[in-house]
Length: 235
Image 1 (tube, rainbow, N blue to C red):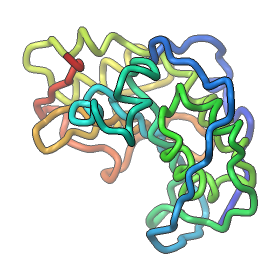
Image 2 (image 1 turned 180 degrees about the vertical axis):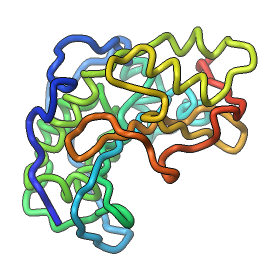
Image 3 (image 1 turned 90 degrees about the vertical axis):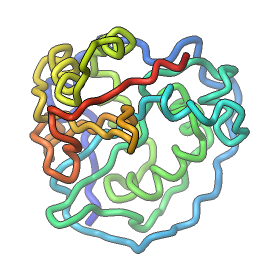
């Protein structure tokens, strides 16, 4: 079941100019870029939206083995800028699963895609996030990406480079460090995804239907607080 998203859902989303830069020397392209074609690879699931997840990828870890990948050149080559956290996607959640691949009436305009390339430095990923997830939240891709930018720009960023040097770093330390830097956030609102070798891949920020932080369920929470973690700095 599709529902329109609000331009500003709560006071936490309306605080301007508090995000620390997560991209260095990134610039939105002057000209529109082509919009990749996305093929549906999973079944359509339409259901009421009960909350949201903002998935934030740690770019140094993602690019660790993709520095020379043509497909990931904008994010990983350095020519498009240097990135810390980037938006993987804003995902709607449901009571017993999550909606996805809802019918799309409007295509993603090239100019809308281009304006988001410093937040999500992958045209392919932006196109997929709209048709797979955004289509279940809004009729217009502009509305979907607007609320994503509002959430993104509301965040404060601690120094993850410094955090990576902490002896005995744990998943709980990552949650607490992020929550301490952000008013209205608590560690239980912050999901952590580590890869099989214990390196940080993503944060998964959990929101209720009102776009305010809520406790993550087990699906989004990730490893226990006591789990040892590592953060790759891209060196």
